[in-house]
Image 1: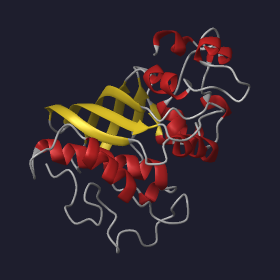
Image 2: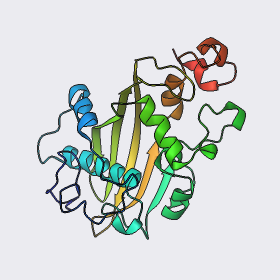
Image 3: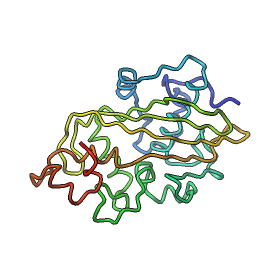
Image 4: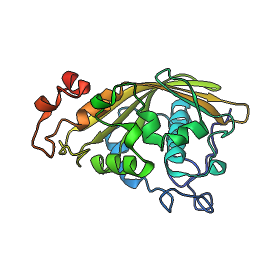
Length: 240
């Protein structure tokens, strides 16, 4: 099963060639440029997959899927998924259709869903828009949040893999000062592929607190520190 075509402008993502980016409704007016985060990826990755291997193909598929989810507005522009059949689930929650996922206001909010009471939310998806969420994380990670696939346990049609995200908190986040530290997130994911090589279901499993806890370590605008904040944010109790 061919996961995606090989012709691409970006070394790690498909559908970004000069011809393929034309006539696309891009969320921020133009196709994304991944030069900076690709450099971060190449400098910090712990796994280099052989060219043409299943691991390389899965890694590029996931990066391409992520690009489309964050940067393309119109479902008809998606190449990696079947918009009519697509389902998304986080940590075993009820699977959402593409329309339901879009109502959560973008990729960040769907990936950071929580059942915590609102007073305990260091980041509250219910209060964020697509643009405010984008600003929050791109400000905190000016060099991006790199992704690598560490292990592939099964190939298509049901792809199961382990991943690592990482970046350096070199900008503020939600009123908390940058720490300059590396922030890492490990997790597992399942991508289901149909007979047309389109993704029809995505499941992610990870602890959002491993990300958010490390983003609110720095002093806040009111002068408080992680010790003061830990009483209101349960993630901070187990970080540091």
